[in-house]
Image 1 (cartoon, helix red, strand yellow):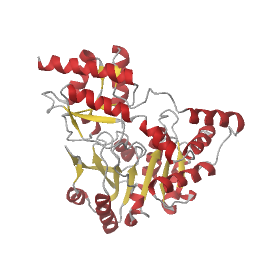
Image 2 (cartoon, one colour):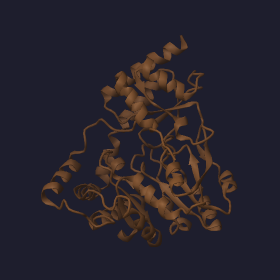
Image 3 (cartoon, rainbow, N blue to C red):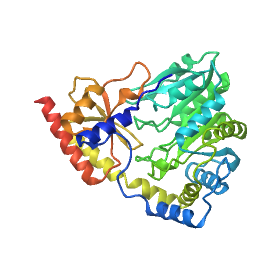
Image 4 (tube, rainbow, N blue to C red):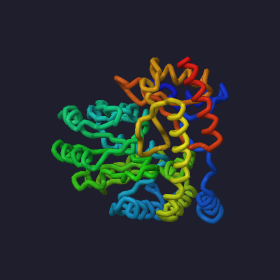
Length: 380
């Protein structure tokens, strides 16, 4: 099984080679939160730099439980938390632990590009159900039709990347009914749970009673604290599932850097007000990008969360597919983006472009000016 270079790395390389503004790959260029940097410095100097426990520092696992208790009302025990080297490793450990060769895994498109190769590496068979634009709703009927006697897992992503939409409680409750009826596990990628900008409540499958014992929640300190290079993540699940995930984790990365675990534990303990203020740093950039694009004649789809906005190319006057527009936008317009079709394994939507706003005001101003000129060139 051969895997190519991800669309994120390829578009970022094109940006570097053409001096384009990179609104493709989702990494911030705002200053790092000083409280976290200081916590990491203290940990390097004053705490251990040796192996931590395989399942993660007890202090971090407890801090994760406290964080979710305060922000989402979840009652968790540290025994249900496995600290991993990023959320992708948490996904890998979960899939390798819970998917057997020949099992079918229902994946909801658009999706993170690691899902399919991880499922295939475990010997599983991905089966696809699509969110329906422009609202990106999940059709429960279509999900039910995709279930067969071989189905073992449903893989969700909420808030969704790239769409920025979130699964409501009613949808999760309906998924819970299906999971109970067919004895399915739900693996939910929730890495964007800390970056919600319109007040919509984030609801984890762990908050749904029918899913509490059969769900795995995956998240990322890199997204919560905007420190994408730290690669600290976790999987949270009921004890029986957590034991199976930990058994796989020990033979993937075994442990995760000790000083960064201490720093993340300190960060999660800063409290809800600090966390809300940190996320709010991106609200102005979000507003500026939406305003600038709208004034330039671009049509955008509504989104609640993530660092991204979605441009509706057809409604914005473009006739070419998103991958073509993205390539031209780099070379002719000087702005990097990600075609939403890259988030599909089959039958992609090809009329949407993802742009990120987790950038400085100066970066976004320059990008908007370039995007406005590019659109004028296309309509001229």
